[in-house]
Structure formats: structure tokens, C-alpha cells
Length: 474
Image (tube, rainbow, N blue to C red):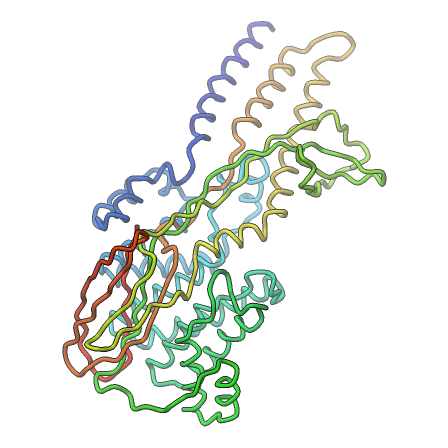
């Protein structure tokens, strides 16, 4: 029996060491080569890195792979291929990624071992890139389909949180973008509705700020203009008064207009933080977890008899939780110029702020799941150890098993540090008039230390509303 115990303890130590070495690495650590290639603009190499990375190729990470692949193909100008990947990602989300087996994996192993289901704001971004891909492929009909699907996504998001304004229950940028898509299809009625829906999200906030973004001046002008074009005089005057803007109708520029999106920086990365908790029973018999400082209290999710829970079995727990680390963009601001017209690029979506705040919104619920899972493991380990020492005799097999369970519980604990990391830190935009024929658009970007850098692009003015997205991923 002694040899059996030694063998089990030895095997447990080896397994534990392997789990520890793997557990120390976050998702970001394990995809760094891909991440660096994207940041450097080496998109072809980035695709190769994705295809050979064993972590993101795992079935549980399929959604993440599809979103990353769709994004890098878009950056590389492979718009048709990009949408093939985004369409598959869309299909996976529609079919659902939750199952009993997947829930069991999260319960008995860790959330990093479950299927990646995507952040709520990531789902909206799929529609943004799909619509742009269709526009660049001159497929206006499918781009408008994506505009309608933004409404469906917004409805699902609202239903998820009962349209709670304190939760991320909609996406103002996606609705403003939807309005632009409708307007490009000369559907000013639906464009007005979309702009109004976007503006109402800002109105619902006391300071008209939505996840790090103030209502853009361009959205204000678009809302008033489309209200006027639809003959909604009362609404137009009301919005003029609200925004302090006097609308003056003007003919469409001869070459049309360009809506320019600047995708600046890279989304935050997730890391892991470890916190210590204890299981406490209050005077009413209720069980909850509290941290060492007593500043955090988390409910214990347990379906068994709470009165029979032995607190000694869960004296202390070390739990792993995800935390976003922002990446400060290299560029702080930018303007675009066409001839004598210069327009500042306004922030319309702050992905960094969204990521951090939406994670914080669900932090208590996630803490409860993690701690409850660990507590159940700890109770099972304690019961096995108690069973190994009964009537003054020691069952070496059970004792060794309890130590192996303890080691596994400790070293398999891991936070879910996955996210769509090649999304921009923020999206800014502006609308600028075009001349008929070739236009040279200058983008002047100011770095964080105050230096200016200028890039130019060529746009052919065709009398219509056009789109262009420009990425600076560093």
C-alpha cells in the first residue's frame, strides 16, 4: 500500500507540475507571434500563425479562431474569405454554444476549458466587419441584411438584461453605423430611426456618455438632417434645440461623401488575478464567501444541504479571475482632410472601456460560480481524507487520492483569459465631402508625444455615400 501511495503521489506531482506550467500562461501569452504580426501589419504571416497555433485550433476555441481569421483576412483585403469565416462564426452563435457537457467541464475543470462563447460587444463587431466586407465587394443588398441583423442583435441583447440601462443592453455605435448603411442605400426613413435609436442610448445616460463615448457631433447632425429630409419638422426642431445646432440644408457634394472609420490601437488583453476567500456562515445560517479584507462578499451556489456543510473543509480558497489590461494606443487623435476641408475624427466606440466595464458588471456572478465550484471540490477532497482515516486506520489509497485531488484542484484552477484581441481599442469616424473623380484624402495622426504623422488614400468620388476603414493597430 505504501508503494501505491508513493506512486500516486509521484504521478500527481508530475501532473501537477505540467498543469502549473500550462496554467501560468494566459491566452495572450500563447498567441504572441500572431498578435505581433497583426500589430506590425504582416497579415499574411499572421494568418499562418493562426493556422499553426495549437491552442486556438482546439474545438473549444473555434469561435475565437473564426473571428480572428475573419478580422485578419479583412485587414489583408480578402473580403470574401473574411465573410466566410464571419458567417461561420455567426452561424455558431445562432445555434448556441452552451450544452450540458460544456457546463460540466466548467464545473469540474475551469472556464478556460469550456467553449468560447464571445463577449457581447464582439457579436456586434462581427456585423460591422461583415457589412464593410459586403460594401467593398459591391454587394449592397447583403450589407443591408447586416444592417437589419444589427437590430436583431440589439433586441437579443436588450432581452438578455431586460433593457437594463445599467447593463450593456445595446450598442450605440452599431445603431449609428446601421443608420449610415441605410442612408447609403437611400433609405432615409430607416436611417433616421437608427440614428434616433442610437441617440436615445446616449440620452438615457445622465451625462450623455455611453461606455467612454460622448454622443458624436456627426450623429447629432445626421439625426437632424434625416428628420428634416423625412419631413419630421417637429422632431428636427426638437433635436436642434436639444443639441444647440441650427440645421441648414445643403445639396449633396458633387462627388458624394466619404464616411471614414479610424480603428485605433488594439483591444485590451486579459490576464489572471488570484484572490483568497473564506467560506462564512452568518447568524441566519446563510453561506457566503468573503475575501481577506472583508470588502467582497459572494453568495455560495450550492444545491445540497447547506446545514451539513463543514466550514473546516473550506477554510480558505484561492480563486483565479480574469482582468483586462488596457493597451494605450500609439496615436492620440487624428483629422482627415480633402482639399480645404478638414474634419476631426470623433470617437464613436471605445472597445477598451466596453470590455472593462462589461466584465465588471458580471464579476459578482462569475466569482460566485468560480468559488462555488472550488468549494465543492474542496468538500469532496475533505470527505475523502476523512474517509481515509477511520477507526484509527489509514487507507493509503484514499489518502493518496485526496492529496492528488488537492493538487489537481490547486493547479488546474485557471481564469478564462480569452478574447478577440485584434479588435481596435477604439473606433473614430467622420463624414467628409468628395469631389467628382479622384480625391486625395490625408489622415493626420498625432502621437501621444505630440508628433504628427500623415498618410494618404485615394477615393473616387461617384456621387454616393462611401465607406472606408483605416487601421493603426499599435
